[in-house]
Image (cartoon, rainbow, N blue to C red; front, side):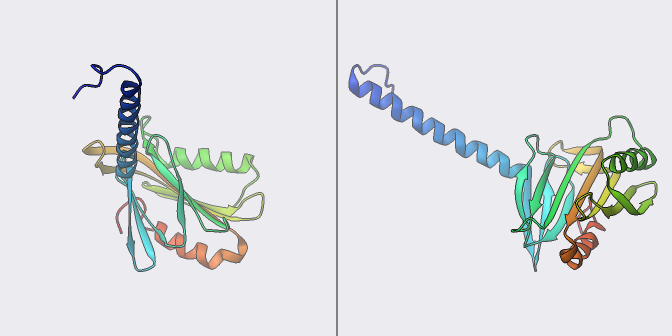
Length: 190
């Protein structure tokens, strides 16, 4: 049926109704696309986040809620209800073939210049870890991994740098320690 053959007030109403219908369809499609960028499955007190674009995983406690997703689908941020615990995860292509030694040097320099203390660091050929205190006194933990991983979004293996970052208040140190144990598997499926 075409609405253009009608004239007058009824035509305007039908065109407006059609426009509203197509806007609703467009919103549903956008929502479905956003859901395909990542998924979260729940397992006994934990959820498993999978990033669709880069194919990495992170297991995290159910008391954290995903509060934002990046516009290009490379990561998410999550927080506890009171924001005393936060996690952000993301990935990017390793376009310049950076090594973990380059990542460590860049991160140490950046964190120190921002007033972060570094109380623990670890490096090997696959990943780095930095931990310490933020300028506001929170505990932080960073793990960055250089790896090749299968990307469902690109339907091929991709070279990436995956990053997981956690901050928590001193009162939540035991919860933070539990989260750090989950970072052990990152970026691979536990």
